[in-house]
Image (cartoon, rainbow, N blue to C red):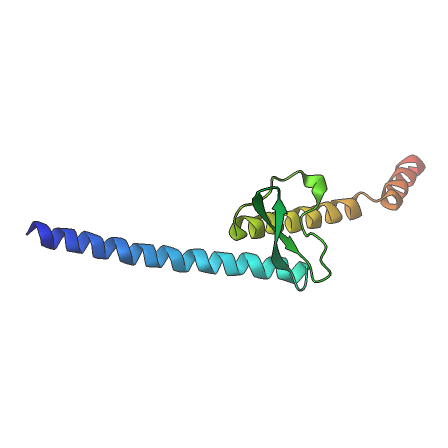
Length: 117
């Protein structure tokens, strides 16, 4: 009876692990598509830093997707590199939208309109 319970628990654990792997694979592909849409031809490369390997995502021209200005630590897995690239792409898009909303031209028009009233 105990062996049967152990087999059932092991089988449930395996099926849950497979289910989680499928979910993680879908999330990874979604993340990769997000980055590839904004940086066509993006791919992972290995950069050697002394004795350590660090993964980095670059676009088709070889420029890093994650800017050095963000001061993100080097990644030691490909998945983490793609996660950093996704958040860097999201962050740069957010900044680009914010800069357009607060452009100097719009601010001058707003101030001129307020002072004219």
